[in-house]
Image (cartoon, rainbow, N blue to C red; front, top):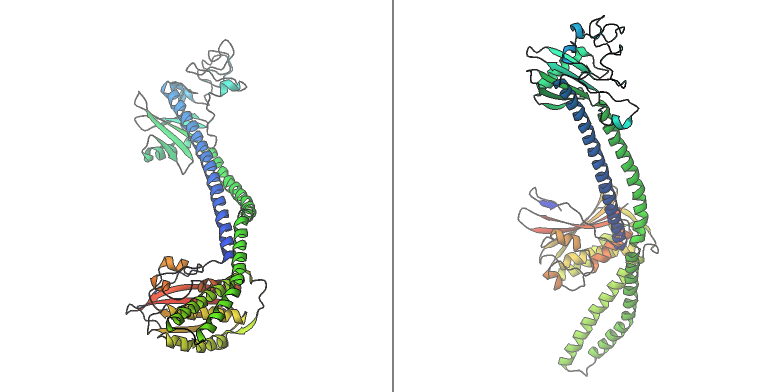
Length: 491
């Protein structure tokens, strides 16, 4: 069976489902639906939580930046305009290390106008610590009062018209005042009035002051980013744990959920088997008696033709009953079929010889290409039945005068039987349904003797042998279409 270079081939095999495979697929679908719902629910919960926390952190840091810049704009903050520090620490009378100037923080309480420890104007009559702009810092033990105070670490600088940087405030312990130049350059290079410097995990905000200077505030967001990252990792692990647990639960529930379907299929098999056996006996009586009457000489030609029709239809009905019995037996045969080593090469060769006269009478020819000494584990009678069904199907539905090619090969530790016939190629939909019981793919199949049960029996016998039966289509460079039935059996 050589193929031309222009051969078009569809390599999407489909194996129809027996009852056990139907149950298995139902359970898989049930588990898939359950897991989809669970995963979607967890994804929504954790996504909303993540976004909410991220927005909260962004709002807190933006509020802290805005408060710092507003404080600078009012001339307040921890340092008034006259008390701003230079990044080099030599900022004159506002220097933190001033050794006795009027703004000395470490003064002795005798003459420092702005001495924090001298009990001067920076403490009100109630002993509260007063900011330079008149606001006060509440006692940290007063939690209600502290709720309105941002605890986000902030660094605030002022950039004057000569591009000289003055550090107004620095709460970020790991950033020195000397690093202000780097952060300011990065914020100016960014071009936005506010944003995030990803390289430093710093959020910034810029604002033009009334005096022509530019205030830039920086907030440390590394802790919030670390929290969000840990939350994301934790959420993933929790989701995986929950999904695993629910997957096990869904497997158990799926068995319970499909139990009514499984029971209905068993009842259907039992009905088919019982009805078939009940019909078989009266049909045998009808056929035998009809044959006796037909062979007698006491009938006119017209009545004889009528009896011939009765006999033919009875034979068809007997065939249907036998196929129903085979189908019912095939459904329940897994536990009661004896397997042995079978010479599949010899079995197929002998079977082809018995079908050659049938093919000749139908106007077709049979060709074979059988590789010798291919052995499989199986039931000889049932393997022959599969081959009979495939060859019979090919003879019935191939083009008249065409050749039916049967090939047996060994491939990847599997025995593969090919039955190829020329005829109208099956569509994708037909390839998924042709193994269904009583299915006919086209009008030509409706007019052909049979009931559409042969391939259903073959697929179940293939599954009984742990094999796979499917159909592929191809066409050659002359436009001739082919259907190829493939049976794969483990060796």
